[in-house]
Amino acid sequence: MSKRYIHIFCGTGMGKTAAALGKGIREASEGKSVIVIQFLKERQSGLEQGFFSRLEPEIKLFRFEKFPENFESLTDREKEDEVRNIKNGLNFAKKVLVTEECDVLILDEILGLTDKGIVTIEELKCLIEAVGEETVLYLTGTNHCTELWPYVDEVTEMTTPYHRCEEDAQV
Image (cartoon, rainbow, N blue to C red; front, side, top):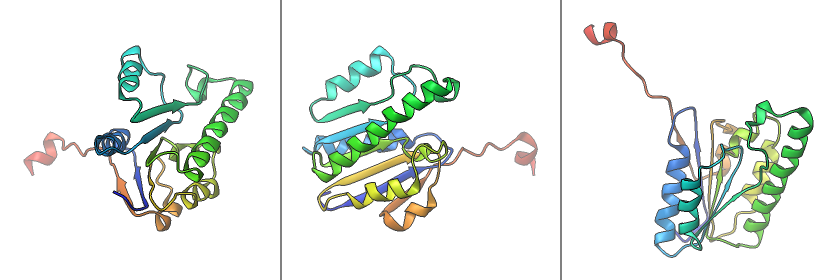
């Protein structure tokens, strides 16, 4: 893709991050530069970190959180510190978009920040407005953030798979 394009992967189902990363890997294989910024993701194992480091310089991964614990289990003081770190990540994302530092930017789990009151819909709209004419932006998260849908090119909703019980199967 060589035109401005914005895609949201949202919902409670699995595969949002995998879909966005898959698109990023495909575009990196076509010579595009990709930056991934992850928000509120579990700490990576050494294997995952090693894998991402092998993808550089085509794909660069950034995380701004400092605490290894889940956000909900942090003390109030630690949460304040972590929110500052996350805001730094948000500012970095905006800088990357404004300076057109990459062809593809993946903001992984950014939509979930709205549920926690860390990021507002308005802040996400500002990010979308900063997307250049040659940039692709992928946003992922469980929150649908339907207020953003009019500003994006495509939305993919991932849902939890429906499992039929035996009674349903006999009908």
